Image (cartoon, rainbow, N blue to C red; front, top):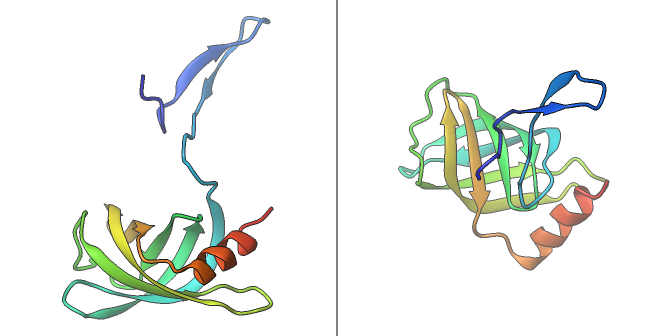
Length: 124
């Protein structure tokens, strides 16, 4: 049974019921505000703000109200981690979700150094 992002009703011993939302992501997602850029498949650049970040992907808000990308396309993303080391993450990413100017992407080109920096940055 697929329960990801679908509310399920649960019932307490006291008799009250309440909604439960399951999150079955492989990596924990963290809310952030990181400035960056992305390039669509035609090489056109746009500004973005990364709003959620995980070890395997990101959610971002494009400055353009109607980004010229489609689900399944590979784009280039670049953003700075706001840590003490100010690491630049530049990688290819597959577009997984589009909701107006909000996109969800999965990283596909992270090198080992970038993986380590992201992992360190995302530690609780």
